[in-house]
Length: 212
Image (cartoon, rainbow, N blue to C red; front, top):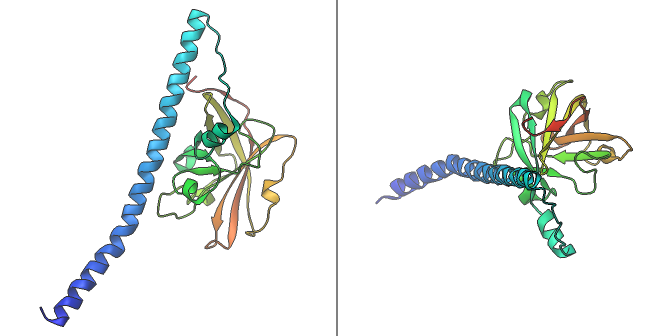
């Protein structure tokens, strides 16, 4: 085989890999995301079935004691909620922590911020333009008044209304500021990673159980 043919073959292979690798990453990320979502929903259904059975039999649930080490393992990477913004066709699992591995498969909850459904500022971050999935790529299209929902592990649907959006610098930590009222903050990268696009939300008027 001539040198020209070898270079041509290598050029074709490199071209194929150039287009194929991003597709593989995206497919892998989406499969992991779907797996987390399905496991969360299955676990939620089992919990609700157990609660219904206990209500019918009059049995009381006993809480099992776990060590701090076990609690840390459960917290790392586990799905804690499902986030949905219907107006943007966004629906992703939320995991505890914002490590690279977590953000490659889900939306991350900043552990030092408020908990879902409790007083304080609950801050969630997601990738923008990730090769693993869409995540918060279209977050900048959100409108004031849009509804953001978080379905937690207890089956409670927390609804929030978007009140404002703005852009801050990458080292601006004010979006993590905690207060006495319940609020939700979403953010992602903007302007090729040099800025942060922020969405602020407050609880909507209605909050109820899943599928009620």
